[in-house]
Image (cartoon, rainbow, N blue to C red):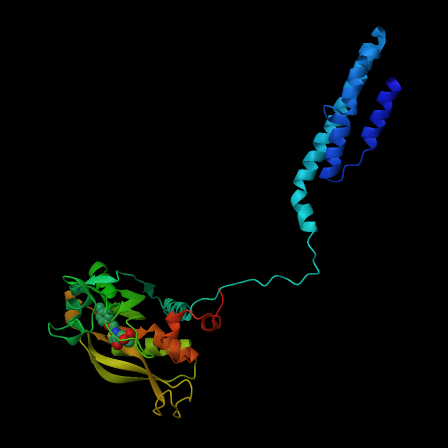
Length: 338
Ligand code: 2U9
């Protein structure tokens, strides 16, 4: 009988457990309820009474040995089961192509504009898309009968609430809540009641800048925008200012850059003028400063505004504004990935 115990002990010690199937086989053969160790315990009734104690101790030792081996191998196999699955991968197979998204071209350009102005100390400001008449029009010197206040140009929501037609309303809020010096950039979505075409949309994006301090002059405006144009469109790009009119700036100027396509020699894009318009600018009207609680005797400032769609179309030679909202993957895939 003791020989049988020795034989099973040797078998248990020699049993190689490499995988879950072998572990199960080990359990069935040795540690399980109907395994060989259970049989050995049953055999105790056939042992001479004076040897039963020694026999019992031997079989118990074997039982502990087998159970310890089972537990250890079970733990090891569980710990390495993930690794085991990974090892089954065929590394010679071609990789599965990753489906990385791309950033929308308007996002790419908006972030580039922000980075350029951040480098010269501009911070970012945000405000509501649904505005009141004061922040969108009155504070900015729009006369009572100005055409922009007409239903045909502005989406009215209820009473004197409307969808902002420019992000200047954000800057009015900044001026009302902060003291100069102010250097802020407000990118955002704006709304105008216009028919959708290749050149116009009722929802588009603007970025406006505001710079207010003591002794700010038109020279500061020109130098700031010159820096922006060089950074955004390249060092070869020229800039020019054309006199204009806006209710909220005086004097006012339209901003043109030399045509990126023909470099100023004349082509279809610039209608053979050599110049393309990128936005507007001017010195903040003293009346607007006063409306927003800033003393125009002490402070002066400049402001500018640009359409992000327009800048993007010029930079990437996009001919139709509608491409920005159609979400055609063939168009979107051409832009920078995340
Ligand atoms: C405050 C005072 C003045 C912002 C300015 C423009 C000129 C301008 C247009 C460009 C193309 C809008 O997207 S567009 O249609 N913007 O021409 N914007 S000056 O002037 C401000 C802003 C805020 C308090």
